[in-house]
Image 1: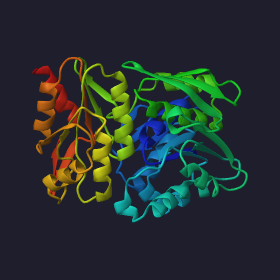
Image 2: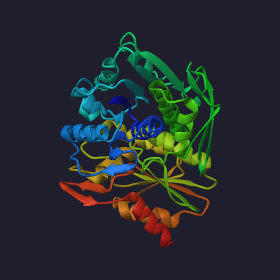
Image 3: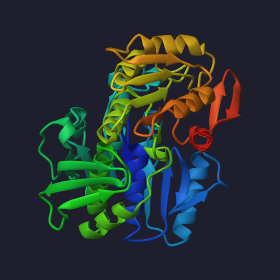
Image 4: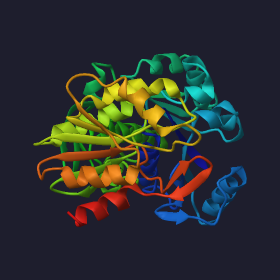
Length: 384
């Protein structure tokens, strides 16, 4: 089994999904492991535990069916516990590093050092695919072993940066994202398309393209696979049109800012966002998330996974970061907040429901209850 490992703050699941789609052009099935679950190609594997043993059984099952590749999302907490030593990747992909998970790591330095574990374990003859527009890439490249090939990618929003795969222009529509590509690599098409909507997905697609090329997928074949791949659930998932209601997993300041920027680029009316923040987790990101939400015309603060914290206190911490003349409401019942926002949106508006994305449950105190943003939004839209 040859493994492509993906790490970073945002974009891991989408990038891993796109990598798996491209690797399938060489051999099938491809084992895919993300926070959304275990997959063999598009088959969701639900009979294995979400554990190390379940992971190994998935890999054995893939190999028994003739699979040669795995695309694996490496979280910072797994890396901090030595997972890259237990299951080293041959190709490592770095998406970005922004404010998140400091409750688990204690400091930005420990967070970065955890991400570095993936690249420190790459073998000679392997490859590292790095986001050259992110300043952490330069630090990570210092720990990449000798004999590992480095490929770099970049998008315009992160500034000018030297790259082997460079987006010169990113165009969004409600059908997907088009990326004009300049490349130093042979055979790379001048245009890359993905079905997901947003410049962040252009970044993920370039990362996946670089990893696929490093694994031996012909560039044209990789580009075709990326264009056909369905994005993971809860990643700029369009629930309805007129008004456009979008569900997204954005739960960090950078992710929320970039997702709102994509929504703003497509919005002809007012932009509304409904979101909260998790309880018993990184408190320092709450005010910055409020600042990121200031891109919207209207903000509704609500409950995410409050766990043992007071939802009103979490909302107040987010509210402290909101700047400008943004209209702000607080509705701590998340279902009511979504229903009210869908009902009040005009046909030309865009409503972003952020923070939970693909999650189908909500944690309140010690209880875990069924909760699906997309289903609630869809029902609210149908009852308008």
